[in-house]
Length: 364
Image (tube, rainbow, N blue to C red; front, top):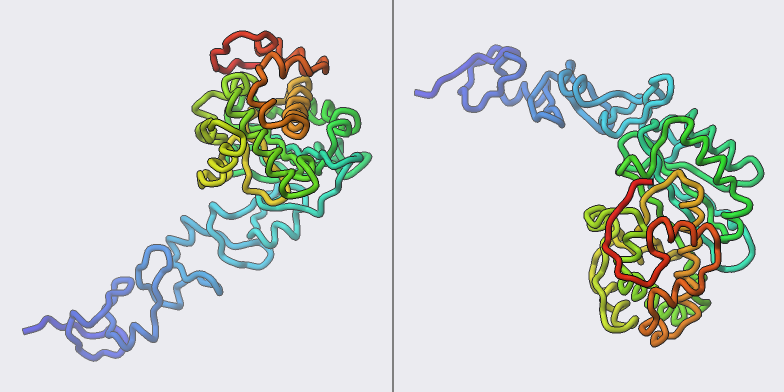
């Protein structure tokens, strides 16, 4: 004989295997359908009158208290790991955060870009800083310095950082970066607020190059970018030392494609690799080519030298033929370098000589 229970709501006896236990009560199927809901997080059935809910979630009290919170503005329930807190510990969903906060943007934010400097060769810098807080007040201080004379910088969150932010420039020519962008003051301020970059171990320095820098037609761009890819693979050991990253960091954030015999074969290999954006030379953006190799820095000379190096890489790619790039040595490349910042940095990294390089990383 089947075991039965009396429904705590309607008082009618029902087979136990057709009933639901809800917060210590046994309910028949009909009463359960009318009076209860299921928690979206733990899947436990609860009385609807005890549920915490909005248009997106139905939750029991325990799951809400442990894993969720309400937006201060719209009262929407949001997961705690997707919530945004301001300096006064007010909490917001991503939509309300964007309305309240135009200081630190989400990682996928891109404004209407402002191009600085004449010409087609523009560089956009993404500099990650960490260990000083994802704090609006700190971000505003950096923006006040960078944007005092022009709209140069915006700031975003980045999931790879522990407690920091990403400083992103609008596209700028090399000359504008070196002469107009107040990098020295920005870096000094970041240091004074306790931020790290190279020493944090989590930070990168990424440089976006406008695709128009490689030529005005798709064919010109394709050929020049192929030579850039080939150069990076050919001189991987030298550029690894230049980058200040370890090989394991490269493998994670800026992996190489592997060298091929010619630039055109190099491009074909890169396109067919399905490697995504975590490559030394990221080709997934429609308007830029991104060099992701470099470790973050708060040292002005290192930042300048990195931008100068990227400029030389572009120059090789656009001014030389495939055969010239294939035949050139590291010494041939160094022979064209005259900038004192870059020469100093190359000497610091023991790269200003034509001798074998043992890849490694050194603190700065």
